[in-house]
Length: 61
Image (cartoon, rainbow, N blue to C red; front, side, top):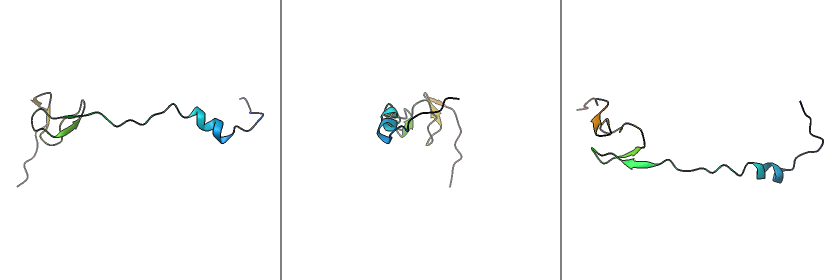
């Protein structure tokens, strides 16, 4: 394994790590109830995905 001859400065180390950009996840609205939902996920409010019932929700009274 290679061993460095010189210490890499904090500035040079941090320059190497600048390619990463944090992005917020894409959010859409549920076609059934209108709640905010992440793409390609079942709606947590009503249990629908692509207009079809995917998960039956337990009714709380």
